[in-house]
Length: 596
Image (cartoon, rainbow, N blue to C red; front, side, top):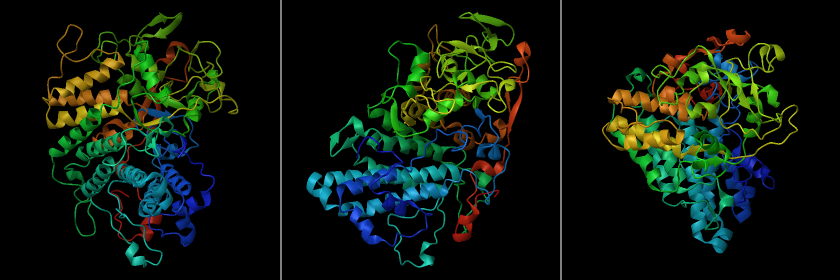
């Protein structure tokens, strides 16, 4: 396969691939079996088929219409009410209107992967030219992808239907296609087993035809399989899934529990061991800019392609479009991807303490920074704040802005509410993280776009997975401080310890838990983690509701007032999305998720 391995553009065999990908998970094998069989006689055709399986990896760049993980949590807000995320934030979701319905999409990927696995061994051309090893690698890649698609459904919908290894026969009776959901633990065991099996075969580094190749970045590797396993097991150990008696009435038709009613501490050990296995490969390292500037380091994680922190990326993605949607109007952008005040307040001060703990924090007065008057609310903050957030009177250069200049969001300013009927941030902030200032594609989209990989897994997450699991299993394990401090050191904030510049080590397991969760909120902000984290921790009710921002309806100093910017309604049932009524009507053995 070429460098566009995760591409949605399949040319020569698009007709075949559409047949193999369309429909829901219970759909049968295409009738045109002779044509499909031809695909598995030719090396190039089989590789194109596998490329199509890769294409089912979701692109999370479109946070206003494609996925809600950013803007239906407490970290972000989308300006426009015309998109589906607004419906979700207003609670306009039910089985008949299953917005962001990814059930069928992922089952299509599962089915395509299973069909590939069932037939790739028939490819005599690959075996004659490259040997059985390449066939085994391709088989393992599909197995790893299939496991990932299962987990994508699990994190959004909870327990899933495990369909087995072999696609249904075309003449199978309808009764044979009726399958129930498995318990969450059964799903976890299956997915982990698939990833373990794939990891034994997959190469350590991306390769094609048995040879390592940078052109094949984005293909499944052993490290990717292990990183997937670490995330799966972290979720499985979390309060939502581990002894959650709140879900005691969520049962299958046979009366069995979908969610384990008994807490199992050993699940945390499995999660910790899985994360440490990724670390111990020695293949990845935290990205640090050669200048030593932590702001540039945090930006470079995303803007420096193929850096050693990236584990799994999606090559083809919509990040350049998000650049434009997030940039200020001054830069040719559309001011649409906002940051909530709740997230702004979560960032630390430069002394490594929270705004409630630090004597450096003040909400009164202004300080001149680089010739610009900046609210003291934004002064002396940690480097990640400056890498991640565009705030009032911060200096920006990029897009159509030829020179660095302050950007403003107050009522009558160039990016304010009075300047455009729709394109203004409701919170008075925009996302800066993973926004490529070189992109200049606004005002009709005819400018330059900066293409770059979209990160799905990176080492920073694995470190945080590891320390969270360790703290729950053995809060005295010294690795907790080692790897938490690695994250803080790269971020440019003081570490925990006993030295003169260090902060006191959190005194209890509960205190450390709070620090780890805060670190995760900051480090992984806007990376499609927060939505799932607040649910697996069972804190959604505490953090959802009114989202705040600055007063964009005011000018001058009156702008710097916390006001309700938007409402992200908390729906208890939205622990998991509803399974669509279409699926419920045709698969009678499936039990609907609680509350729907």
